[in-house]
Image 1: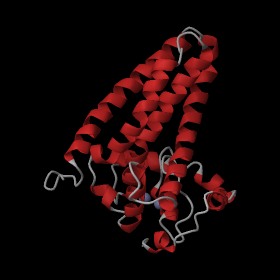
Image 2: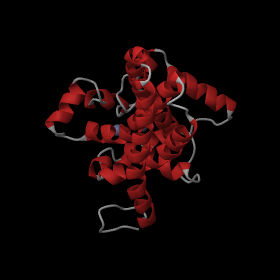
Image 3: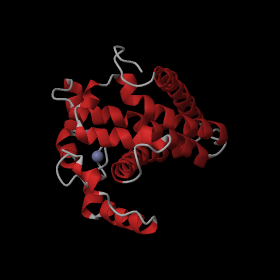
Length: 237
Ligand SMILES: [Zn+2]
Ligand SMILES: [Zn+2]
C-alpha cells in the first residue's frame, strides 16, 4: 500500500493509472484527429456533424455516469472481482465520507476512468474508417468526446464537493456546463435515490421526473431476483 505517499491504494495500481491517463490522452487525440481529417473532406456536412456529435456525446456521458453510479450505489458487492474495487466500493464509501474525494489528487481522481475508457478508444481508433465515411467520422468524434466526458466525470464530481473551487470552475458550475454543487446536493440528501448523474447533471431533472431509476431498480430486482438490502441505505449519512 502507499501510506505516506499521498494515496492509500496499491503502488501497482497507481503506476497503471500514471500510464493510463497519458495513454488515453494520446489515443483520444489520435481519434479526434482522424475525425477531423474525415470531416475536413466534407465541409458541407461538418457544420451539423460537429455540434451534434459534441452535444450528444456530453449528454450520453452524463447519462452513463448516472447509470454506473446508480448500479454502484444499489447493486453488487464491494468484494466482487474488478467491478467491486473499481466502482462499487468508491461509490459506497463516497456516501460514508463525501469529502474524501476532495483529498484525492488528479491521478487518484481520474485514473480509474482513464483505464476504463482506454479499450473503447483503442477499438474506435482501430475499427472506425473515419477518413473514408461520414458516419465513421461522426462516430469517431462522438466516441472521442464521450470518452473525454467520462474521463472528466470524477473531476467534475470532486469539484462539486469542494468548499471553494477556483473561480473559473465556479463559472463553469454556475453556467451548468459541469455538475453544480447545488444539483449534486440533491443526491446526497435522503433518501439518496435520485440525481445520480455527475458529469453535467443535465439528465438529472429528466430522469427524476420520469422516475427512470426507481423503475429500472424495480425491473432489475425482479429480473435478477435480488431484493433490496437495507444495509446499503443504512451506511449512508
Ligand atoms: Zn451515490
Ligand atoms: Zn458526491
